Image (cartoon, rainbow, N blue to C red; front, side, top):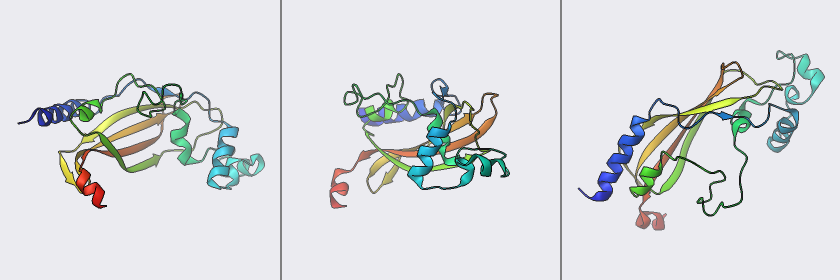
Length: 188
């Protein structure tokens, strides 16, 4: 067995040992849910639903007031990007103290392909709420041979909570960490 295969097996074991446990510290929204960010979102997405921006119409709706678009859920706890030193961080907009996927990189699974994401919205967010998110690894596949190379599918779940700790939504995100098959990629 080669050193790289052993490193890959160890990286998968290490990741699987993290399944179901929080990764890192909870992310707390830098700002409460607010009208300016909602306005920017709805303009960018061309979503003209009046419950997002029109006070009177929102008050007359089933929500009784302004709510945030449900797909904004992820945006509230995103860290502020740090541009200084971005090249040294491999293009990552934030500094990472621990990267649970680093072992896969060291084992030769250096490429990342986002494969899918699913949201579960429990309820709409209201102006002024401060959201917190936690992330857990849900699964790590056995090694798969794909058209673009060998790799592992890694799935994690981010859970979003309000100030009382009530779950307001979840996001499942899956990637393929793979060793690129350069011959196959050049034929694409």
